[in-house]
Length: 131
Image (tube, rainbow, N blue to C red):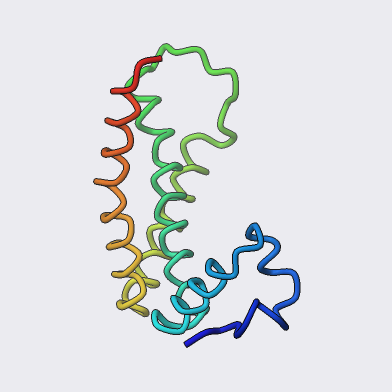
């Protein structure tokens, strides 16, 4: 099933944006047709983004506890109340998103977990190459 038949005729500038390769555009079209709608992919991405926002917001507490005497060039406004409210609101958002759309949320968690071994593979490969 080709999204753009022929030499990508009628596909405007999209193939040119990916280096003129019509195959990349076809692959993206196939994945969206086989994998679900744009709305499903968007929900999956939003869940993953907010999970990382929550983790990043909670690191303020970790670093303050781990290194209490460290120099702080930038102070977090309203610490500890504002970061705690952000982490709590993010947690509530993730909870309701996960319970409301279990399939997409579980898919987002699975995609992140699948990426962990890939990260370590490339990190090991990078450290093995001489500088």
